[in-house]
Amino acid sequence: MNKSHSWTDYQERLSRVTAYIHDHLADELDLNRLAEVAHLSPFHWHRVYQALYGESIANTVRRLRLTRATGYLANTALPVEQVAHKCGYPNAQSFTRAFGAVYGMSPTRYRAEGSHVAFRQALAQGDADLAAYAVEVRFVPTVQLAGIAHRGPYMQVGKAFEVAYTRMAAQGLARPDMRWMAVYYDDPFAVPETQLQSRAGLSVPPAGAVPQSPLEPFTLGGAWCAVLRHQGPYATMRSAYQWLYGQWLVQSGYEAADSPVFEEYLNNPRDTAPDQLLSDIYLPLVYAPADSVY
Image (cartoon, rainbow, N blue to C red):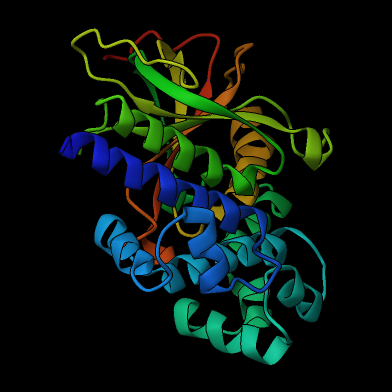
């Protein structure tokens, strides 16, 4: 038996499950239906899932639903009841219990006091010196990646990462030290959500391995960038972008380069609390200060 092939086969089957979950978070997700998607026994498949991913299927569903919910709470005015239904909860009460267990506060309080609020207050007050979110200007070396294109809401780019990782593993390119990065081509304030274009990528080994379809090779970096280290839920990052462009950039004396922003995700949401997630936002710049070193 080819053990490598068997492992890859399980990965591909379970990646179909995660893709299905991403597309049906608002629906009731039955374990038997997910077993059908995976083409695996309903008695055993979820144990295989937990063994491979280090997270139960129930935790995956809850994590993805609540991640999507934070996006609605931080970036829209949708009532909590409507957010609950959009994220697969039958009512606001069950949603509030699940949200509080993970985020330590109610959805209403998160909307009013979450970390996204600090950026909005700094933007409203004209404060470009948000000490807790200092911007570093530095040269960012080129990173070679292989990835999958995503079209739609940026908060749903995780689906493309799941596909990319499975394909990297199938091609023998997956490594524990892979860098997880994404590039965002459109302004979510100017382009409808359904038309937003991005690309999720994982760094490839330096030994010259060539990724095969459906993975597409691309590069990021190789330029001077303003780098904002962000800590907290991914939903907060939209407010961080508004502050970075609306305050820091316009007061910094720098000019944004004609290339898109990109992000790097420094820890894993499967085993990291939402308030401990670390991400770097890279804003390419036209030039760098004369005394900068790299």
